[in-house]
Length: 163
Image (cartoon, rainbow, N blue to C red; front, side, top):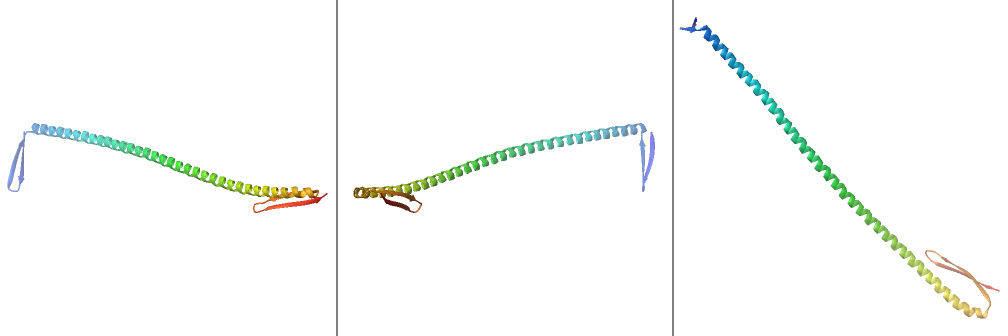
């Protein structure tokens, strides 16, 4: 047992304490504090682990969302490129069709013009032959000639050779 005197102003405190009880009480308090500190350390460690796990889950979710967005964007770009390629193909086919039609039309016009000129030459030959047959009876001459057809006109060169 231990007795202590403390003075505070006019007040005198007499503290009687059992040393063994006091030591025991301090030991119990230290153990309690130790247990509280251990629980606090365990709690802090658990909080750190939980925070790490939640962060991992969030990062994983964000990664999955980013991958899904990337897949959708890739699909959309591929779809747009296919549509653009189809439009280009259609434009090329339309252009080729128009060009073929223009070429065909030009060819038909040239063919018609040449046929028309040929018909003119043929008619002229028939006229000359008709006149020549009448003339041939009267004289014994020989005709020599050739025809030149150009893009703009028709030329005849006819020679009458007397034998």
